[in-house]
Length: 192
Image 1: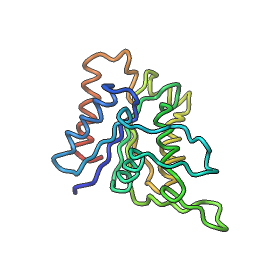
Image 2: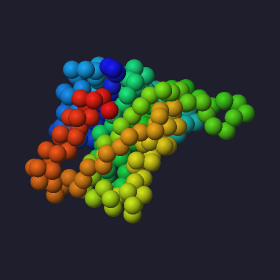
Image 3: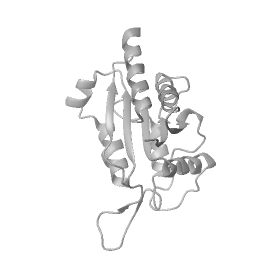
């Protein structure tokens, strides 16, 4: 069954391994699905939520387009590096600036938990790291995965994300890189 899929490359650096994986996913998915890609490196916006949530901050054109892509998508694939256990600052800024009340969730009078406005969407989170994934998961607690999945996507109405942790990337040889490319290609082909 064809899906509307948004692929988000969460690396602020152009021509990264994450970008290569994102393009691999898009190419594999394009025959069967309607696919769009957003590359963080190409977005122009202030990642700083200058006034917190006390005062509205006008959204730049790239942020409005990003929100439109999120609303359009049925399935969102996030491909991001893990830096110091978390996502890059610019990617966090993208979330801070766009997953806002009235877009991703809505406070309701008398209720502790806001209404989820991005319901019935699915997601996959693919993380690249220089830490062994088992160490990141079992010793560090996979904080970025929890942040993206539970605290952002599920909070906004997405179903719980599927995830893949790829690493360590820095020391990976070509056979390992090819294995990760093949995994992402298979996921794209299946729309997962």
